[in-house]
Image (cartoon, rainbow, N blue to C red; front, side, top):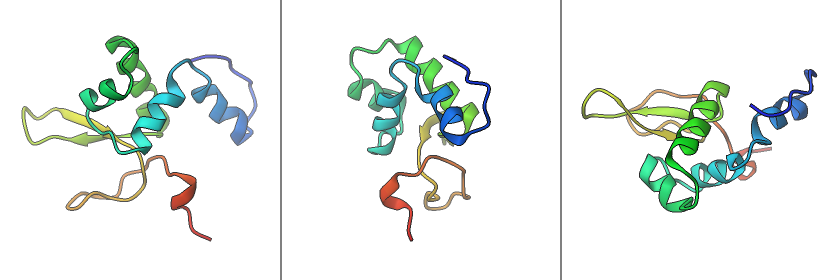
Length: 103
């Protein structure tokens, strides 16, 4: 990851994750509904596959995105942002958009 601020302030901790190049654009694509790797690639055509994969792994490790389980090959098929559970799936921790947080 990028700069470490060495503080436990939520803003500083968020910036440690989000200040990497392309990360905010990946978050934008996730919040707008892209879940599969190729959907993200279409939204970020100039981003390399390896960098996209790296950023997704960082977001999953940090809890900003949750892997979705696939029905084929037993592998993870995509990632999802948001805290609302998918139909038939358990609640997963994720990123919520400001519009989805209620009073």
